[in-house]
Length: 353
Image (cartoon, rainbow, N blue to C red; front, side, top):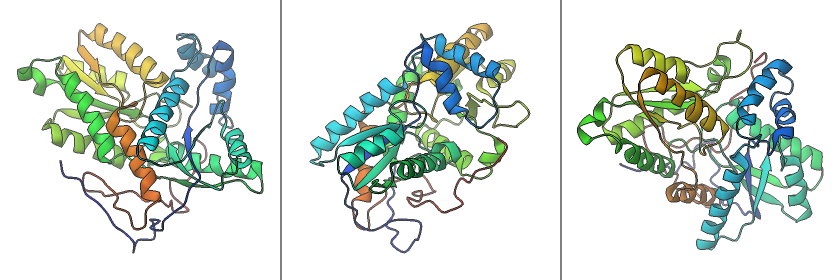
């Protein structure tokens, strides 16, 4: 596996200056902690989208199935602790602040705390490795809204680039795939169908971002390393109005399809996610497991990268990029590093979705 670097001081989409930071801002989606939180949380998630209350109650059952508590906050806290430990190990003296889009700790409250603590500038890690409205631009909008709410003296925030082709993300995923494939005899592994999954988004948003291109590039990098051509990119966890087209095929429909084609061995790799949160636990470990049993299919689900050492080291590497003049930007594959300064029209909003 060859790691590429990029020194792109002549490109306007990169920030090649040496930045001084007071802190790291860790941003994520958020999730409820108990049954009473579920519907208010889902109302936050779907605000302004006109989702009927009946649909919220239906989705809420996914959370009630697990006692109303999403695992995402605990998983994020575990990742933050691992990041703090690695920062200390590398003698980087930056405190880490935690802010969510949809639940406590809300980003606006975190921004206020950062201001109160005297933070002037922070580098931001977002728990999304791909470019799309909800995975990148909306987080940047959340930051701006929080800064406006806090007012004068709110810290400046620099978001790090998306990491879908960073060696640390790829290496962590490859290690887990190889371990999961070992559940099949070596002679049988090539016949195992690999289904890479990610959160579906509306087609109109996909057309205005590099989401599909980046996902397919991640699949290509991984399968070339594995020398495994028997794979597909599929989607899961769609929401919203059924009248609006979203990326397909859905993982459950896909399982029906490949079963009809005679596939009996399936490995699901949730490359669109970095932790085993609700979409993974319910859509894959519950619904897809039940579907596999119904179809008589042997199915394994690969763990997400979580707090694996290569992934945590990747986060620190990306933070150091923004602290370094004319940095080397490590990537795998052919596309090179993504921009760390988003153009004005990047992942732009598409109304009506």
